[in-house]
Length: 272
Ligand code: 8IG
Image 1: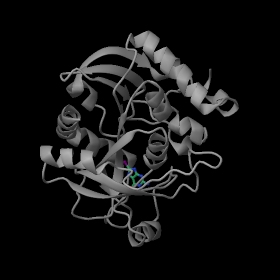
Image 2: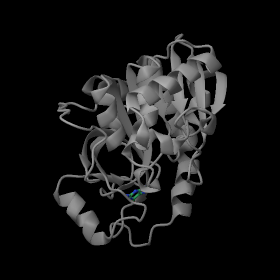
Image 3: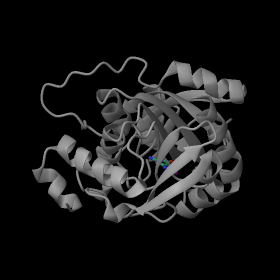
């Protein structure tokens, strides 16, 4: 099934098909935890455990190759030292790719169908708080969905109170007590915000701005998963910093912080 066919099929059947493919190709019938690795987080998979199978995203039903430089296009099955099976999704579809919101959350729904009870979602983002310099990891405490859409269709009323598990945030602070937390606002992108939009985000209660995560977290909660979100600040948001943003800066801060934050993430996963 190609990505465009997601529009014509039941999204949960499509996720079931992808999960069946993953089980067959990895030899792992059920995975426990899924990780979505965003900008800067790519090195984490190697520290979490031993990769027992690597699939290219494009071969798995409903997935497509990543559109962005700095994102990896693989789906890996990792065996942790604790004996858990982690499904590492290096291939995120962003809303701005124009493939529709079903495509954006297909990975999360596939992870749920593959048995995952926990979703760990990571991203690179802009910070509104000047104290968070590029390279700072920040726990996501809540989100503001500014995409004007939802991954849920029809009369699907899902409670999003404590969407970002306070239990897992507490585990993260056991690993690193200095971790701050904040509210993540998902914009559609692909352009970065104007300085006025950044001030708007600040006034409505956001601490971080990005182009992912919120839609995925909603789909995960709907699927019954416990969600943990962690952002890597790769830049100060527009107008907060005196210099203009560049995708190059984003990639470089991700690379500079990559080793440290990946170790942090691996230590959090070990506690789940
Ligand atoms: I990395 O400053 C990264 N992603 N919307 N704004 C938005 N997305 C981002 C930013 C940012 N930095």
